Image (tube, rainbow, N blue to C red; front, top):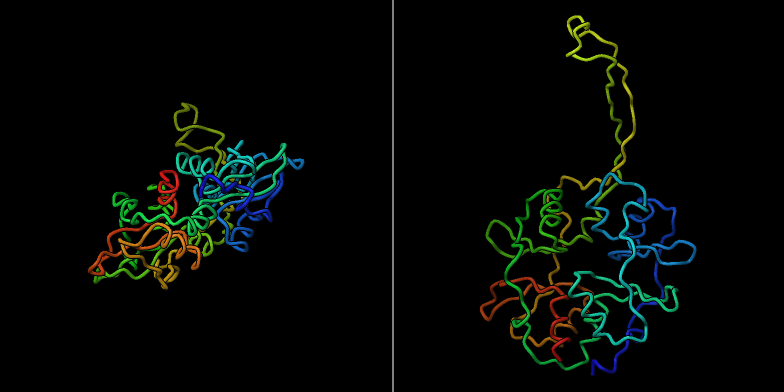
Length: 284
């Protein structure tokens, strides 16, 4: 039963983290290597923030970790019930929560961790009860990746389905895939500082001394390639009458955070994100 499952029973204890002062490049490399959506930030062995894929994609030119991270994140105790974590994650829209004991980071619990634990809870309601059909629709497979990244940022979603010209579902693109494809781009910019002004009555024909300052700009670059080159093509699907626990088990076995849902005729009707299933846990 959910009442008997504590956060310490399912949390991840081997947590990748970064420390202040730190850099964006270090975080980007870690997110790619570990295939995680975010990492805690420590200073003097104390938790001071979290930096996520969304932080990087929303601030592509920022290099300082202290300015990128989300400060003073919500935390939970390892002795709390998983429903406490589920409620926070659902209400706040987070994907992860640091687990802190006596001020010390001891683990991390994510939406995926909780959903995986739901596979053994025998929740029989059909997933169609928790499928949100409103929100972001699919994108075309030839849409440039940087356009899709901006589309997802504005819609505040982590993944979208991809369709081809025949309107068939052909893939899923997530922020994980976008980060994995991104690179650091360095450019040389120039700024002209004038010693005069066009409005200065003593300036003849707008002639004035000009000082040019050159400086480097480093930013995360999402490549301008079709989304079809990056998307996940091996799609794990679910039927709309599948039970919550069956779907949780499928997500667990295939290590996915979302599944396209098909109706009885095999027609795509929506993308079920793992966080939607947290509602079923809180109702049981």
